Length: 142
Image (cartoon, rainbow, N blue to C red; front, side):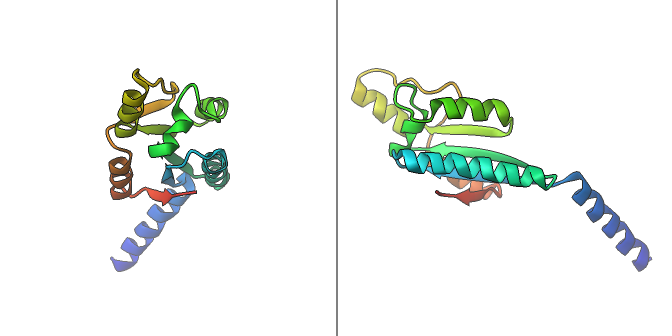
């Protein structure tokens, strides 16, 4: 009986490996620095390429807050075209925009700050990062 259970466990492990693993990654951006923003997107691309080359998949959420929200603001994003292209190429990539930062930016501007179409507002960027880590996401800060 013990041998049968061991064989069954090995078979299940082999099958899971053959089907690939899904990795979950949260990328934190809180700086309005094109170098840092591009490094974050490079990390997303590199992680995705690596895991896909291994037969795995990856779910990535980029969380931007504070000065880092600039990466998702339509009129100021230094990477708008890159985000658009990456979003089309990577179905498991999402961008979370901090609602607190967005509200403060909009108040300061005196009008709603337009975000890129790819951005989804989350109430708090910091809270979102906590939630993702509690769900088992690996945390990356470029």
